[in-house]
Length: 584
Image (cartoon, rainbow, N blue to C red; front, side):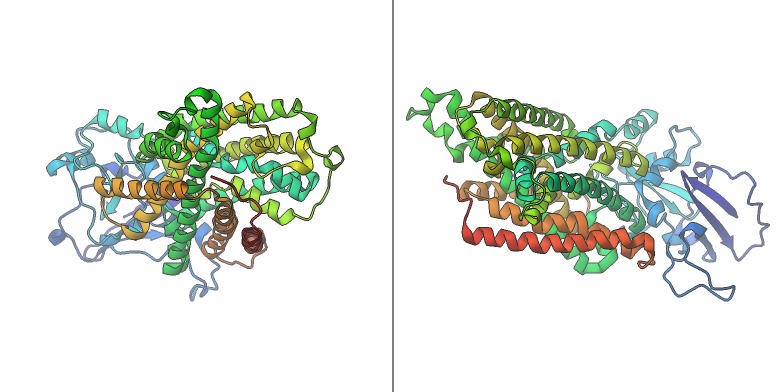
């Protein structure tokens, strides 16, 4: 029996052959029965061992064919046909996008899927034992399931990591299952919040280091590259059949790639968590003292305004509970408030900068500079501000309908808004302070400025919700590297989250200056995640790396290597010279 399954723009040709019986092949244009009408899978002892399922490779995925004698020796993607017991939607077709399109919106009494699920104890079903986790792309939502091909039947299997006992029992449950996940707006909010963070206040300094015109060009160009590489990560996930950054590198480069991406991903995310804790200690205590100066001078309540207490209290009371969420789209409301706080910072810096004391302004003759000697340092600062690639797959997985087109819209809008906001911040700060611009633009304003203290408070609030986003990534890396293929465990989830947040809190409590660490995590880890890994994985997965269409990927990877080396060297040099030493 032959049939055709259409998944949006992709077409899968499948053939079920039985060598023990003679069948008359049907026309390719004859109507095919729906997938849900296929008969249930027979038990293993009743199956005909000669029956197998073959998926034909569409022409778009084939490499060149030499002649009828055989194909070229270039690797062909997708892989060759598989046997009946391991038949799954592989590669690009094993994505959640494909599964979403296959799922039915209604259940009838004759629906074998409904009967199969409800007929098993506790609503659990089993996937084919021979299907490994490498052959399947897991979902990121706790209440969603998986449809897998087992012979000629569709069998619902409960997702790994799902809450025990959760199953579909009727149309109401199915409707609720389909409504899980976030929409485009929540995805945009999460991506913008992941982009506009601690690095935004350093962008005026980037313009000072590179020069006004060069800095603006770099900011726009790196914004465009960021947009491209974020979408490239999702494309790599489709090509590799993986749903995590770690899985993509594992598919491309094996265990070494898995170790490399896990190291850089965890380093960047954990370094960001530590930096955010330090920012809380550097900003919030001064805001509280300015609001309650008399109370801060008392012995009884003075400790409430100390740096250590502020970091410990706000991290434990706000950031830690948010970090315990399993689904990233539940942070959308908190992220929206964080975006409002960043808008307040932009408006406050622009307004207070225009009326600031002339004695605090910079040299007006150095406003319209073209090129300065610190252009490479500025690339590192801008790269750190824009990198949110380690969150891209989580944001993609949180969409209600995860498709490439919808995620492209999320990426384009989010990147455009982020670049515009960063450009406003950079110009507002640099055009006022020019040669006096500091690494944190808020430090250029006097400490007793009431409105700037509000901006500092908003900046600290932004760290409350940005820290959980980084905690999501740290936990995902640990789960993928050490507990791959295991079912979700609530205790393990809490332990990993608690240890990660507590470790970052400990570093923030014992370290006053994380400037060098921030530069290392930004220049070393961020460039790998944003420029190097997406490009080299695409070259590995797409085939024919010497084709002219792959030159942009080569250029992106080379650019990332250069920036990584220069940023690391410059950060180490600054650490040796100890320019930005701060007092606790």
